[in-house]
Image 1 (cartoon, rainbow, N blue to C red):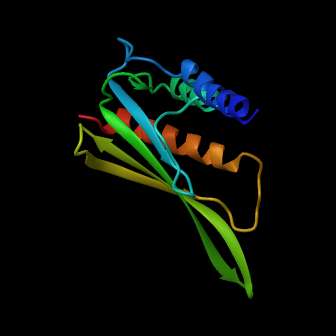
Image 2: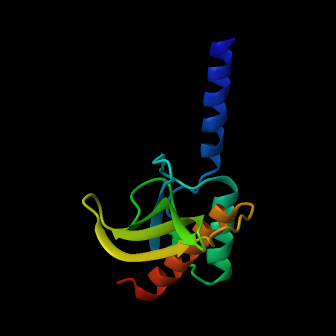
Image 3: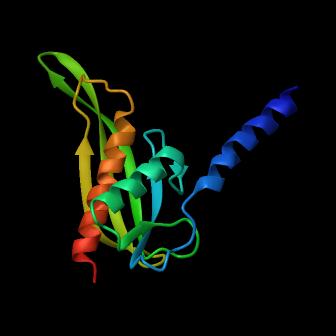
Length: 151
């Protein structure tokens, strides 16, 4: 029974990978890959599912069409997002918040740092899916910066 559960979990983790972005389209001048490190240090090398669709829609809606996310081949840029948890003392109470940092790296390993964006959640306010929204906002800001400032 344990083997069946392990196989089902492995299959469930692999199926979302089928819906990823794909290679660089011809209309795309600047392709970016995505890396995410969560608060526990877990690393993810691509964006998938709802987040991928929302990022593609926002980039297209905001007219950043020369920037696109890919997961095959070699991207021109890497958007590396890291999450860290912090706390503040306010009126004797410890309030927790999340800090998200997005770094834009260019080239191949070793990567060259181009620009950094950061956002935080509000202390003591818990919103459903706030992490997803902040990460997508950071990616949108980075795509805008990239389309305006790329060489």
